[in-house]
Amino acid sequence: MRSALLSPLQSAFVANGVHHHLALRGKEIGGHDEQAEYDAKKHDFGQQAAFVQLQPVKGESRYEQSGQQQDHAGITETVKGFEKLHCMLPVLELGFSMPLAATKDKDIKEKIMSDFQIRAATIQDAADMARLDNIAGHGLSQWHWQQQVGGEGDGGGEDDNAWLALSAAAMARDDFPPGWTNSVIAERGGKTVGAAGGYLTEDNGEKIGTLPAPLFEPLYELFQLAAGDWLLDWLAVEPAAQGQGIGGSLVDKCLVKAKASGAAQASLVVEDTNIPALKLYHSRGFQQRDQRPYIPFNETSRTQNWLLLSAPVT
Image (tube, one colour):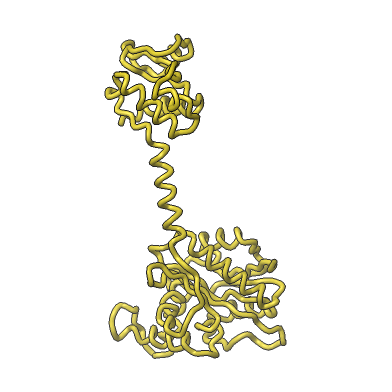
């Protein structure tokens, strides 16, 4: 396909219904068109290429009905009809079924984006949740649980996975707020591709949770500001499944849970450098409410602040 020819021809098809201009190697069908001659010179198709105006074939013909079609499928059938009338189209090598192909691609994309389900978590999901929770925190969960086992592993070997087992054990506890009892799972083909955990907090003047390490203090200060809200504690989607609507569906499910809890608003905390997450949350009505300095746990982080976002539950 020659893109230099396709662009102006395709534009003509979209703009003029079934009356379109084509370079047909000197063949002319339909009436003379001064605008077509101007377009030919403008796009430099050469003197041997004559622009013509395709119109429905007159009379009782099998091509008449196709010539009257106004949509892209009709355009395709019209061109096919004229091809059968020996209009020498092979020189252009144009595929006028492109609109149909584009529609098919869109259908495939929509199918991919909808080919998953959101369900309540079970205790059997604890290991997947621990792994996804670490993705949500960009390694902060691993850092925390690694301190508990007293190691400095990087998660790359069998001995380094003790932190993951410890995190999974916490997710499997009934009394662990961000654990399986308060979480939802995004599943595709029997495999977990995303998850989120959240719960209704109490506004009783007491701190939310136990401070695990000094670097968590700014984070927990923001949690305290959200006391009484439904708190979206964590949310993550597998990297290979991101950008397919899974994160948005998880947020929507969490907002349904927040409404059912009776909370007036939902809140969450996110890093100021997590732009994709910020765009997603803003699209669901979350707005920044406060912030605290981010205390880095490694040398690679560029985050400056933790941001507290809140949205009314409607």
